[in-house]
Length: 225
Image (cartoon, rainbow, N blue to C red; front, side, top):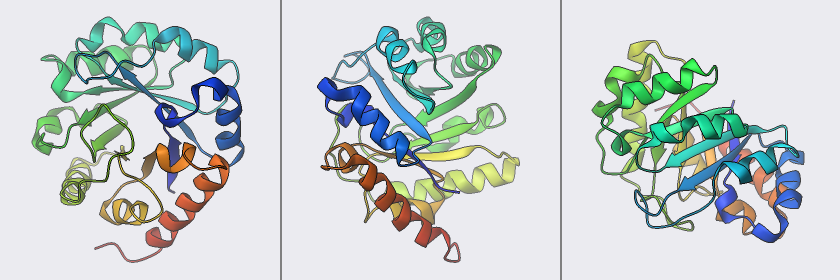
């Protein structure tokens, strides 16, 4: 099953509750929350208080993507705020195993993310711990970028690594996902699609969610290469 994860980064921040409600009503399973610190990536977004405020109005899976240095310092705060899944970047900490263990010890799901230039082998020894592997298909920090086509073979490699490890972890793809690119990501092995401007940049975000999922499901029904 293909799951949709609209990215709040692209939403109208003056109408967050309304826009979240529209994508939730359209069946989106995840709400992707990009947390940026101005160091690991150039932009700054929001912290645990915003996540906690949004949590009151949504039953979606809160998918907190930590694009921050020293994530171990902040994992607890975002879990307390209502995160259901916390993803840390392999590049953001020298203690990746420890960071994932901290998340799992709090009883929620853990993910590991890889920047475009990071080799999949970096996560080989934590695949047995994680519930999700996030492949960045753009360089993190800004929305509205085009998907880097070289990431499609990388998704396939991670798919094969998970199969070899016997891991049921999801493969999430973030960056440049829309009606045309969603089928490419799904063919490569993606099961969770993060979509920002292609959802919230549309007049009807809910309809955008449905259209992207429809395009991806058509590909899922085809024999996988």
